[in-house]
Image (cartoon, helix red, strand yellow):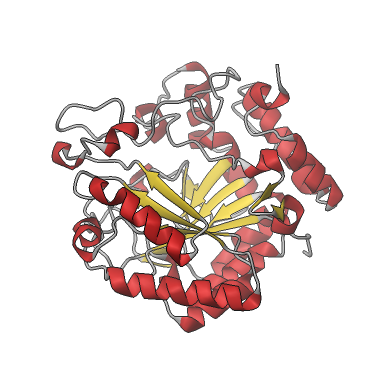
Length: 377
């Protein structure tokens, strides 16, 4: 059996890149967590190597299926404070392989966002950002390029204002496109290849006819990747009927949330005989107010597992909630106390993504070592 099928995210090129860069703490932590996951240990000896940290639990748009957009009110709104961010990153940064700077809000609303990204890059890791680019301008483009951001995901679900605004309520498609042009122009002027820019197009019934139009537009602008993608859809009349069949092959009955992924074992959890979900071992989510979620899909603060600002992080990741979640996912043993992982309907569908370029060693002709950078702290 190939090594990457035996483990979850273990990649030879990744290990070699970490060795070449002298990132020994990352490599040792990486191997420990992969072994803990493989052995289904309830208590882990390592720290997560994938982090989602939310710079802003707020947004200027009103996307109807997003808890922030529809003002669900089950999470504390606010911006991540710089001093709190530094405390978290100083503890996790030496071990992290990737950090996503987004979750429930629009990250560009945080005035220290690009300082946060730059600080993370000093620890040697991949950095990701997702934005609708409505709150963006030339100065933001300069700061983004200066920060060293590796990957930018554009939330553009349409090729016209009419279709785009159906989901991105309150958004201005032309303004977002113009801001994208500014960023692409600034990147080209520097002769830079980062950030790698992906146009993510959530496919709904009202926009499926514009997939190819949007793809052509993305190419003409110079976007690196066009990515039609499924979404979590709670309304049956939003589920696509034509092109969308590729993204939603198993349609659910009206009233049930449509699955987000295609139930392929692309992450190899079944092939490697691992627990259904890998999140409680190798990933963590820190929200803007410090509340720690076991994965990126936990909408309500009451279901979180602790606070990242209350004390050291290593004990937190082995507290009762995390141990109970791992025990349930590894054996199906129901915890005595309420635990969101034991009632999750998406277990295994939203595992932390192990990027494919860890296998190839590069993306868009950028070697993995150039993406990771060198550890300076």
